[in-house]
Length: 99
Image (cartoon, rainbow, N blue to C red; front, side, top):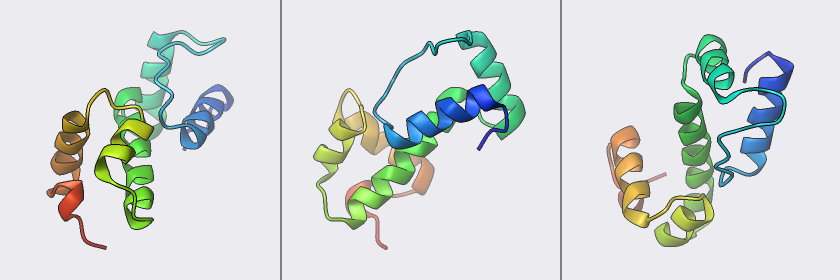
């Protein structure tokens, strides 16, 4: 998690609502968010948000939710985009992921 108070508020908001795809946050410019996230976490803001969504996806898969429901609940525009990202990060599709 970032240490900067403004970024920490954003990170916590995204952790609670990973489907939130805002690009602008009150009091901090999108460019500053991007630069500061890289400096503090090693990830760009987009990469960080994707990781939050993927961690939540793992929780939802473990709870037995369908891949389609998870993708839509997490704010992906389509199921295929979610599956492609999941496979790229974990090496398998969410349907084949084993706990």
